[in-house]
Length: 130
Image 1 (cartoon, one colour):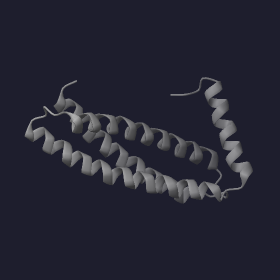
Image 2 (tube, helix red, strand yellow; image 1 turned 180 degrees about the horizontal axis):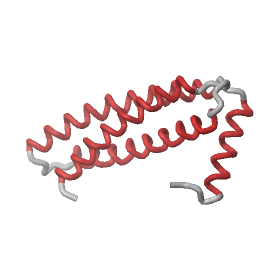
Image 3 (spheres, rainbow, N blue to C red; image 1 turned 90 degrees about the vertical axis):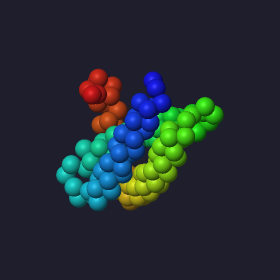
């Protein structure tokens, strides 16, 4: 994959990471034991956390490789630097949203959290994944 294509992937990943952060913020407000669809909300939280973590890993690898590329032309290096700054901001937002949603989950009764995990495991074991 060429340098421009790699950086395009990073830009898309950063945008997707921002969307994951916003989704986690929304879901955090919905994590309430009184919600009838708490299990599905918890599954959405897990999906967003997994997706965001994958985006962080992929983007970090690309940007790290580009930052270490001594032969990168000036225009691309400038773009890498801008993307790295945007990635830092998006990563911080994702980390904060993740922390808030995990703190909110800790407030849930233990049986609600365990039930959601059991349901997710049963779905995965049954091959019901996407």
